[in-house]
Image 1 (cartoon, one colour):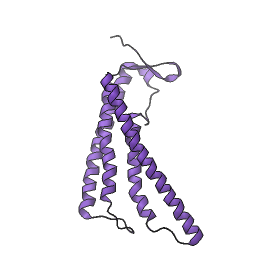
Image 2 (cartoon, rainbow, N blue to C red):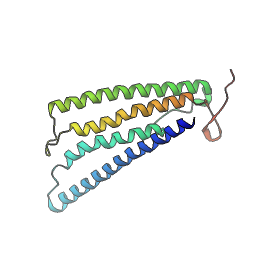
Image 3 (tube, rainbow, N blue to C red):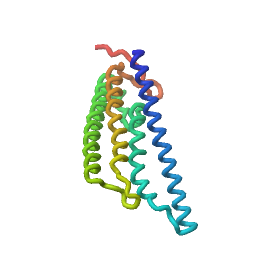
Length: 179
């Protein structure tokens, strides 16, 4: 179990760094947008290509937050049924949901890889800056591909964990299940 905890710590650190890079890109994009609006308003002279930049960077930004959301379980889940259906069934449903999300991420990764290959082969570029969009979508795709092993870890860890029973305040606590 110590090895599992060390591996989780490494995954959390990596996903947080990826999210931090995404946050920095988002702040940069925000500053560029503010500068564009101010220059348009004050001097009737917008910055050429800000919209192109936005189209490229936003996919990277959004993708950068997926891995940290998975490892820290910041996604929507329905937990109120846990105390009503029993800890064992709740644990099984949680494992099933984790596995379904894992399959979805594998399929999404596969389709994004196909898309990146398509835009690379067609040489698609942005309208004003004429930058290739393939590298940008490649980065976004890499973050989604990284979600697969992260979600696999979450699925395995949750499957190996003892079932949780709702405790005071609705939070789960480990419990023994008698057969």
